[in-house]
Length: 476
Image 1 (cartoon, rainbow, N blue to C red):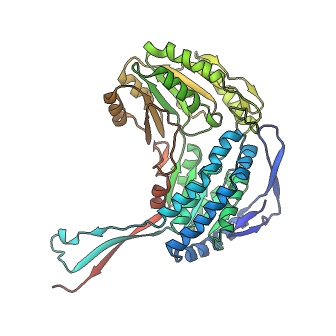
Image 2 (cartoon, rainbow, N blue to C red):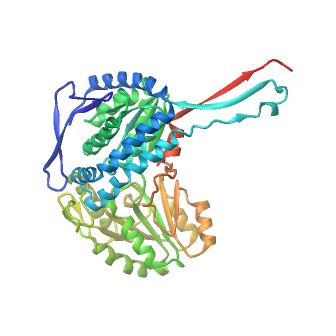
Image 3 (cartoon, rainbow, N blue to C red):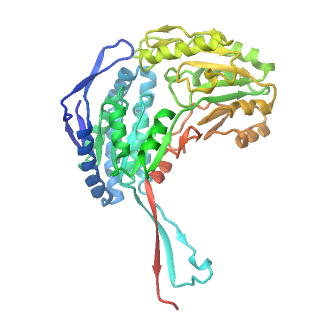
């Protein structure tokens, strides 16, 4: 496929291309053009002009275009799902679930883009101001938004950035993950085919380091929305200069299981929440903190459920868990599990690697201060530790650099309320795991997990600027 530069499909100036390959069997599933620095310059020049045109387009007209794009995304959901599964190694069942949300997510964003309310300012409350002035605020699009997205949700995470940015009246330059560009290009085609004006949307595929550095450091860019590792997010903050930033970064999400919890319900939820998309989810369950009284019963309930998760061909509906994104990533996860065992933990099940597949693993007796707990694993393994009391359980849950999501299982309402107050995470789930997200809800982390919030309403707010207007009349 070609690059999308200002709404026009074009080959990269270098003429270079590369294959996109399946992580399951290494077969080529497509080919994309490799953008370079010259393409970045062409794209940003088009985006600046596109932003000027798009911001002058009435909100109701922008909404109609986005609604047509939503209808196209819905019509093309099966093709998009097949693309997701092929290039990401996600099971076709999970890929269909992801693709099926595309149309509604665009519709949610389209609506929020028409709701840019301002506030009236009570200037007469300030001594000496009087009644001869009226103050209010208005929102306007920031201009050019650069969206940089990861591989693990190549449809949803693209749309959580692109759709709100367009709905708010911005031009967007999208840089998708190098391993999963085909889904992004298929979604971009929905917007182009819906009648999006030229210049408003571009997609650059190719090496993230070169393209990302050039995009985020360019003064023509007004806003950066990035989802990915904390390491890359930190680099973006160093390169960006004075720009608006939304950064959804790493995590090591905890789930606390209290003695009064429904153990079977907790085990069933964690067997799901730890292994969807082979654990390659920022809000995947990585750490489970149990009370010693229930640890044995919990593991007895969890391990058989994990062992029932089938692995294999992502394209088969019989497969319960697909591949990691590359064989190198699978080898990294395998090494992390072995290192935890070497350091004294016990591997109860899983952890074997076959190419890019790592069998679902449960590791118990994990030291909360170890790398296996502290660092983001991004793979199909759950680490189980124990805590003797409430204070130590919360301390363990909060005891990493991250704060994206957390869960707690308890039958005590008071304990649930206390958890809401004391857990340091952007989203807290009571009697469920962090692996749950409604597209309309605010979503983002605390601490090292990032800056800002996504979800259409929150993202539209992040992708607009507020002006204060004062109308001066004559003194009465």
